[in-house]
Length: 264
Length: 298
Ligand SMILES: Nc1ncnc2c1ncn2[C@@H]1O[C@H](COP(=O)(O)OP(=O)(O)OP(=O)(O)O)[C@@H](O)[C@H]1O
Ligand SMILES: [Mg+2]
Image (tube, rainbow over all chains, first blue to last red; front, side, top):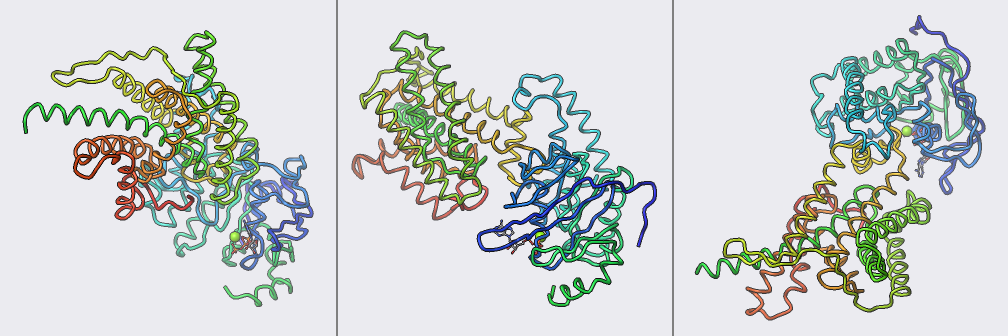
């Protein structure tokens, strides 16, 4: 297990309490509570259909749970809209890559800066000059992200034409462009080859270390999980069955049972 | 071919293109809403009527033309707010067909309201669009048509500039591309819907004024919605250039077929030409001439 230096894990940044969510008859989450601490990397694991993605969707407002609360930066709420989550510094990537397929890599990452643009949403059309100057400042941030993710070569490529692994990287870039306080990654390494996975792990660790960004990620690859996470939350059939540091979780009997019972 | 015949052909084509501009405008309203919210807005035709009627009434009351148009624009923007609040927001994430049904409801509501207030007469509308005929060399062109074409061209240019260069335009394109991704970067879908429905309302207003000035403001306007359907099939449901070119093709094709095939096949060709053309396109290119993918939500 790699132990990062230069960052100190703090108190809870986000806390979910008693979250229950169902779709018709399907209970996706039942009474789930855990916390995500300042500057940590938290892994959420569990078999297919365990409710991991649903949990992220609750946190950033895509799903509204039937019961339970989310406390973020000290404020407790029952639900909010995705754009409000974004406004409060929560950025994310998706399990099934949600990029703007028709736009270039550059424009996709630029779109992550949307909320940083000060000029008013409705009146922007009237402020031609300032809008243009702002654009240049944002371009600089985006170029730095592009360098960081080593995707200079595909800046102008429409992302729909990129291979899967690179699309995932662009999506991470877009989330980073928002300079989030909390970064949610839904299976950022799924479908990647070993080399791509190593790159992605490095990016995640670097983001966490350099910018102190708090990260919650979903991942199926146990090697990766044990390597990069500070703590692990395990879900199974919508319930939390374990929560602790990687070594604890690995030794947990419920976790072993849950994983033996399910094939991947 | 005699030179005279050639001039006549060109006049027919130009006349058709002008009618086509109207189809384009209505189709444009459809495409904007479909791209941004995945809703097939059946009410677009009713919106054309609903936008034009207040203009007529206010001018009758002696309100200056510009103020009447501004008031109608305000009504259409208000309508966008109401539709977002009462239809789109409660039905978010529902199946496309349910939203389509909801727009059917909006259609009947708007038409009913319009009839309640204005009855079903044909109103004359004259906002002072220049109508003097014009000779381009040997070719006679209707001045009204030229004005309309110029206005429509300006409208389209303004829309393109808006979409390409402004932050709101960028957000609209983002939403059209991927709803989830757009929300996750902080774009409020509700605002986008209001903006898009407002723009569609303003486009409907312009179509209504043009149509009304030409043929009178009347209930039959709502049927342009039906003409827009073959235009959309031709141009593709998600393509703005497709809506424009599709409208022009249908307009010109109708007139040409009426004039040249009409005497052979029989009259009334103008009425069903567009649908036949759409069917042929469906057989060979179901996504339309400019469409991005197969229509899935209609
Ligand atoms: N929008 C939805 N509508 C209906 N059911 C849903 C929806 N989203 C999730 N579910 C259901 O909730 C349960 C949990 O799904 P979820 O996607 O959260 O699992 P997961 O842990 O992310 O699984 P995976 O590892 O396969 O991604 C599943 O039974 C799923 O079918
Ligand atoms: Mg998932």
